[in-house]
Length: 183
Image 1 (cartoon, rainbow, N blue to C red):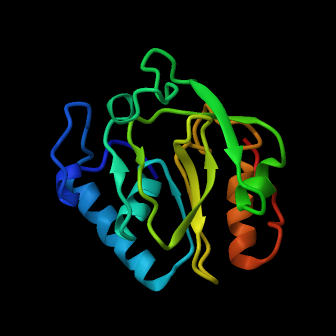
Image 2 (image 1 turned 90 degrees about the vertical axis):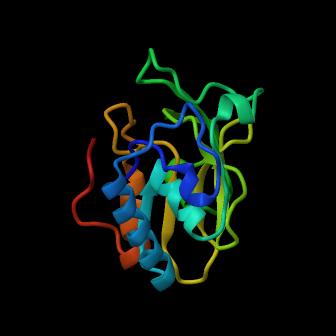
């Protein structure tokens, strides 16, 4: 699950002044865990920097600071509004479509980094209107891996966002959970 930023130096990038790296021990553990999850194709639901880490682990790249890397992008973080939201466009046939259905939806947004190049083992399943990647899913047959840039676990999430956890359980077990998750 997300939190502070991944340290870009670990992936061969120069640090950016806007990057606030997570604790070194936490990042060491998260990177080791991501390597094992990806190598074994273990089920995973990655949120925020967790999605970014999955992508990097599998060979993808990141934008380090959206306001500079994509100056025409919509705001993806508002330091004065922790409940900042923006629209999301979902891909047909994806887990995101099964959760949200058709039409425009809105999700919380609190990030300044994002996926640039998608790793070959993933496909994009949702984008912001500006094209910034907001969700990925595994492109590997039989691997249940979902990543969201937004935070369905946060207080700013909607009741519909919580259904992503149910979709993940269904993907792993093939069954609808007996207890429905509630926000």
